[in-house]
Length: 116
Image (tube, rainbow, N blue to C red; front, side, top):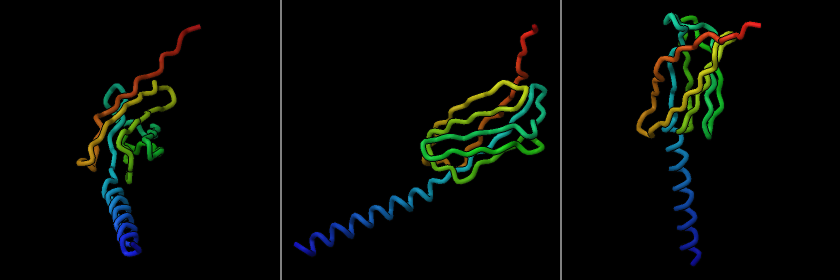
């Protein structure tokens, strides 16, 4: 009976280690570009990524590009914002087969200000 319990414990530990190894392999990168309505990249736009396992923020570079590395979650929500522009939200459903996600170009539109 004791050997049986030890065998089960070893099997459970092995399965847990395999699950941890799979989690490390499933890390993804998410990248894309943010532009204004003329198609020019927006420098300094805020990009926020949220999933069931991640919360990350970054800003776009001088050409409007952004990158997130080591993303663990599968269903990804992105929020794009910049002062003077409307906020854009985008949801991405990922596959365990895809580790490099290229988000289609995001265009930010100027914020409409009502005249007083």
